[in-house]
Length: 308
Image (tube, rainbow, N blue to C red; front, side, top):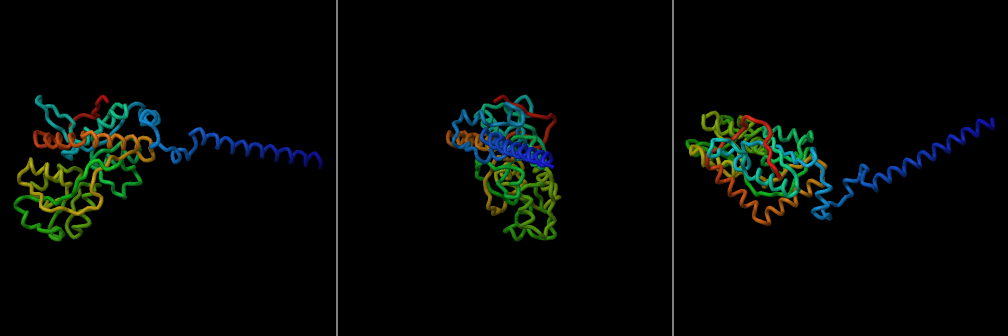
């Protein structure tokens, strides 16, 4: 009996030592920056640029992977050069290159439909999404928002021959009207909010919306103001007739959820681009390019890479 009690006591002591040892390892891991709560305790804002760059991790080491939807001029689109080649352009694409250069990374851009950019961010197969995002609270579960880098607005668009039908947002709410918006976008929410009794038609690309407007398949559509103005400059039959109120005006970069170091780096790059005047230059150049020969939508080819 005494031997049995001694054995039980020995086992209890061994288990106690093991448990204490486990607690010490966890504490050490946390102190070394390997614990589960480390991301919350590191103050990346206090780091120097060099320290921050060393702390940043991306999906592929040394590469900044960005998803975009190139149907949103002047944000992102294809500009046709003198040789007839399509080159990815737009002020968000210029900003993407600036961010990559600022962080010392090689830029890799993958064009896709707008919905795809959200899915890629949610699955964390890209580092950033840049597709005319507004900081919609409904998206906070799939991405982190950068600081706002561009102040924009929202508009209601129709054709010149129907412009007199829409003198207020109330006029858009009519069961006899078909109203378009891009699927998965802020504009889709605006359409459902302001025109709930209309036939709201959600399409994958802004180019599809414009095509259907011009063909008479849609009576109107919700499109970001600067994008709507760009299309109207190229298609005189379009009319930007109404300003649409929206509390979250402004554009942000979508950052892979939980990558606090990268988010800090993106915000520093945005601040630098605004301070040195680069952002204003990017917008001016994109607006000029968007008024020329362009393609809005996907073209043949896969990833678009740029050295940074």
